[in-house]
Image 1 (cartoon, rainbow, N blue to C red):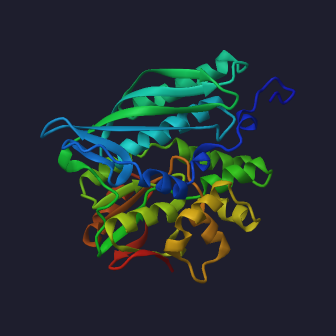
Image 2 (tube, helix red, strand yellow):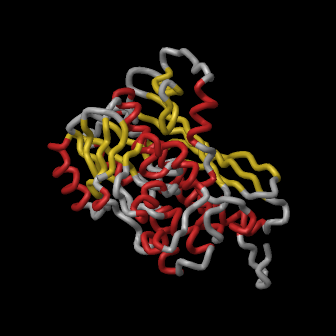
Length: 345
């Protein structure tokens, strides 16, 4: 849409932006339940169970990580859009313990979009891939009324160095490497309930690769890792708990929020992904007496969110010290216990 200044607003072309556009996790589970995964000795991670990316072993020292992720615009600035979409896809590789090697663009754009705008999206994605240590080597673009952009990414990892979702153990401590609230802020901004300062903070976190956090984690040895994206903190915590056969206990007073996110939640703002995340996880998440603002934060779909890390509790202080020394964000938000489901206290 032309705003009258000649500037097209990308978000006006999308029904739903960022990871809030993800297909319902509950429906995905139903869909994939009848899908028989390929039986292959070297397929280390596939659909049994599904994780943040697929992993295929080449030999005793090398395995390939493969993932793809794309979504409609979450912001109007084309450079920010390209960088955020690229970050979101690249972060799946970091969540598996690997390093990106090669990426291809997945793009769908209306033909009337200016080529300069498309160039900014591609250039920003290319810069982000290089920052992650990989190369953007091509891609595929089709015509579509709703813009969509993302990456298919190949990375590498040692077969013994994969970080699964299903490795959490009782006695572990849980950490989060980014604050929450990108969905609330982006929705609030579109409704005129969030200002430029909140928008800038959210964009900063969405553009932040999980590379530096993953580099620190490799030296500490986590039991389980996933990145918190479209299913929200509660949805991704449920996945870890269910696949690990444990109970996750979250401490709501320790939930980190991007400045302004809770204020927006108090105004009743919710994203379109909020009800889908509740359909997926609410039956497995006990949230007695949880303030509505923190409940909204827990179900808020994140775009390019941080890593949710399960690590032996005795290693927690060393992890926090290393993150602090490198001036990286980290927050302990809970623990792993015997049992099942997610309990929020």
